[in-house]
Image (cartoon, rainbow, N blue to C red; front, side, top):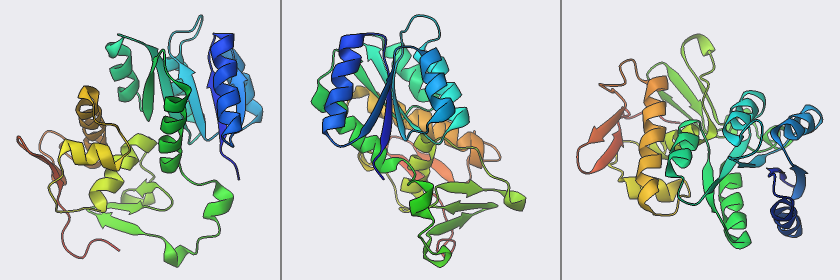
Length: 241
């Protein structure tokens, strides 16, 4: 199945250029000129990835992104104007998988789309082909992480609500448990390019992750900080499968 992408952008020339470029790269692309139009599309279609302009008339991209997250297991890339670092940080805190800064090159958009789609869950029909015994899973404390299904459950099988960007970081730690990981190593593992905002983005994801898996996020049991070095995920030997 080809990945489906929705582009929400109020500038028609830019919207059409990105759609044409991604379509030529082999993706199924739909476009919307506003958040309202995007909501209408999502009522009848599903998508793997959304590219959202933050500054749009009416409902902005950040609000639309929150709504999409509540409806679909979708990757989100925010497009933000140059110099608006605050919007980028807010977007990351809301669970964005990546962002691009306007004006941007179409090749950069394609590279970031490919990076995010590698981390988006497979379509359900493809997941169904995996035998349950073949799935990778890791237990830690009261939690069970299904790495192939990209699902975390807690006590009594309750599902832990987790954005894909948070699961990306968790998977990095669970597959490299009990090893010191620098921010640069984590950024590389989740497909971030190394720039001044990458470390901040990693810290934001770790902060959100701790709130969901730690009893006391200020004094973490699993995801510990090694001051001046990075992070380490403590997992007793034998907990992983």
